[in-house]
Amino acid sequence: EVQLQASGGGLVQAGGSLRLSCAASGFTFDDYAIGWFRQAPGKEREGVSCISSRDGSTLYGDSVKGRFTISSDNAKNTVYLQMNSLKPEDTAVYYCAADSDSWLNIQPDEYDYWGQGTQVTVSS
Image (cartoon, rainbow, N blue to C red):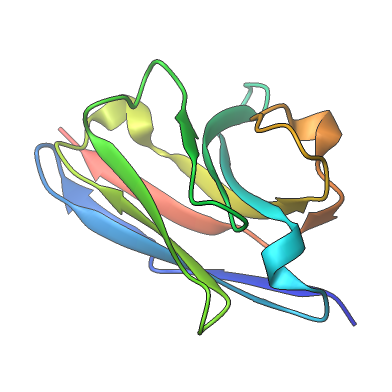
């Protein structure tokens, strides 16, 4: 059974940091890219970042470049999203997902498996 377990969300003040984790199981981790997405109330799901488990290449959405860092521990089948300099507009439910495609992308429709979300709230 494929499982993607996101954790690490919480409430933080603007300017603060959080680290999200995505623990994956039930599929060959090294064959997939893992992406982070977020969805705020009333808004469409937005691609945040992704990482290739094959070669470690990464991609970031424009709104998080320079503030968020994605990394992967293939031995633990876990991907992390370090979020620094958080802003109130980063408030959303954050999801992780897995994509078997060979090209790196953060388009939600391209992803095969999804985990449950974790809430991130940034207060001003």
